[in-house]
Length: 445
Image 1 (cartoon, helix red, strand yellow):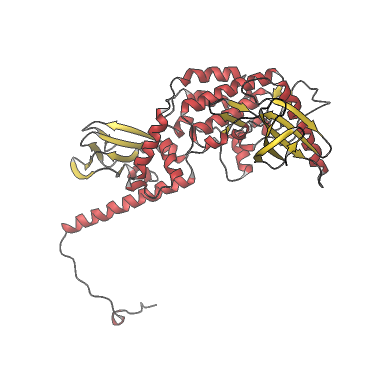
Image 2 (cartoon, one colour):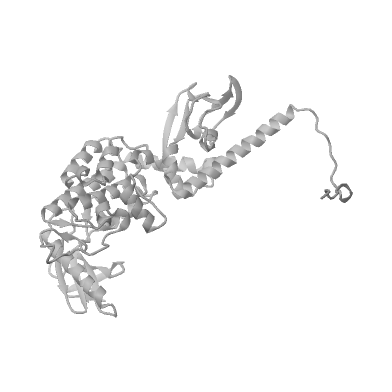
């Protein structure tokens, strides 16, 4: 395809189930634009009518919105067999690219992006528009971290008479990002978009969704009935001030949720100064390389290692500091990165452990008793990777299984070493001979 209307097609940007987006050039202004093309027809007339209506919504609403963080609409044309809409071209990536655990943005950048989205949604609502499908794939981000909300095809126009001219379509939106009231098919206002944006922020900070399930029915049940986990439990490196913000954004009770985007943005601005700067991305990369070379993490995939970084805290511990004490009850465990620790029981030294060795795994693995049976003290300044056991329990099943296997391997290796040490101080063993056929008899019935 060389042209769409007057626009010169340069290349394909992306394809969806119902539309193709092209990079094109506007011959009048000379600027590059994004052109979304939808073709109607085929055997499904109902679907064609639905697509036509969605396209008309996106065109009409998009032209009405004028905000630096909302994709601008320049032109649109609807014909019998096809329609296209001409939009601002954003050179960057959709936010879903940065939602993966191994590609999370520095925290202050994620907060800044969502802050601007709050203001954009506030503007949209003041124009009588509710997006209804806020998710990472519908938020584009340029090189300067300026987000651009796009895809208003599912938007709800609150200025219309909903009894005569409703734009509501059952089941719109993406289930994982839907608010409880959207799932229940209740009347919607701007608070549904703020809930969805809260889910986006949760995912950008932790690399996972607040609610996960193996099927859509279970997911819907959790969204409607269950509380999300604490964001700081999933990522202990986050400032505690984010917990009440995410809790308020993800409130099931509309009266307790943020009233508007400006209110949400104001709270985010109070914690943004606590975010780490760009150097933390470099630090994460260094930490990743350190873990990759430790024996304990040898079998971990790269994605799993990035997840380990999100649920762990690196602690510099001075000499002769007790990391674990006998009799305490907790599930703390972790890995020595460098330095040495001594493990003792009842004041007697049991062993000394160095880089790559795990400590505290017995209480973590025990199904019911977290009581500590040994003391662990640093012998020199030690760097210790403390794994947050609560966050680990909420992590991916793959990471949980990997940790269990690695911890079990460590326990079995130490048990074998302990058996050998006991054997060295034991009495001589009885020497048996190999069992032959003549030595074997059938047991009586």
